[in-house]
Image (cartoon, rainbow, N blue to C red; front, side, top):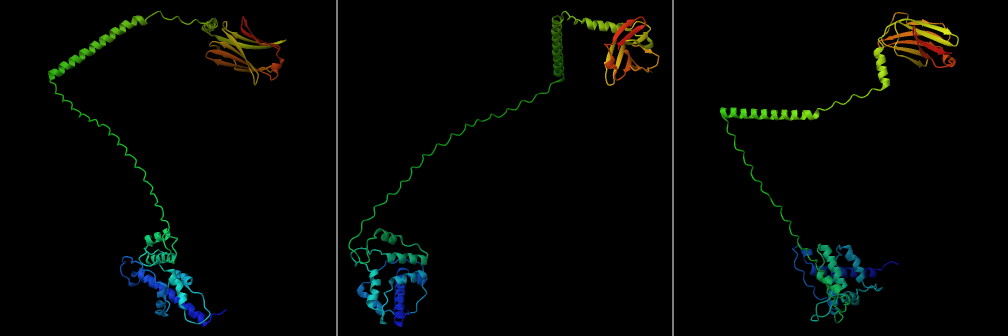
Length: 365
């Protein structure tokens, strides 16, 4: 449904009235906003006009051009706008009465005018415009007396109970400062008295005294050494007894003066193989040794023996294939190289015998 010309006129008149009221209150409460001067003390708000003075205000109203107002003011204007009237008549006086009645206060002389919700809202709005905090006193009064209506009810509501301020915790007793450590003054080191130079006579006397002291120390040390010598001297420990076997071996080695090996004779007989070493004199200790890989039998004669015969002889036998001779400073060695299967053909262990010619080795097979 489109608005008629009368509806538009009523709306414009309501908006102009609201803007005029807001600007008037702003000039009364914050005159420095428009003058640009220094902030002065906040002027006391005069009592709101009564309903009888509302028509006079309306007669002086003129439709000035609507200035740019903050969004918050435009949003609050519809709250005071009167209900739409279908007749194109000018705004009725009754339309402005609610706005004036909303700000009406009690007559002077009955006490301070109570603050209403509209005043608190305007205070906050002006504080935001000016960048100043809202007056604390009026906000506190508005919160403390919520039961006061816009029509000026008689009496005041119950006063809020005083809030007990929390007591500050008692300050802790200061701890006594630790006692400073005792400072021990160090005694200044006394300089050693300078040694007086000795004369030549005193130096000679001191040297003689030192020489005598050294001589006495040497004599004392010699006397102590002589006294300790008889105690240390005693029966010498007996030599450890030599075992009979070792004694026999030593005597045999001592008796093995050596000699000449004349010849070596190998002979195969029925049931045995005989090896005879002919020496120029009776031989000393003789030992035998068996070795494997390849199998061989060794005969050693103790002593320094000389030999001028062949050092190796091939026998051509299928049991003992070769005879080799080795000469050493302390013994004479004869090595018999045996066939690979000779060990399986043995019937017993080889034996050493003393013979008139020298030493014989019998190998049973």
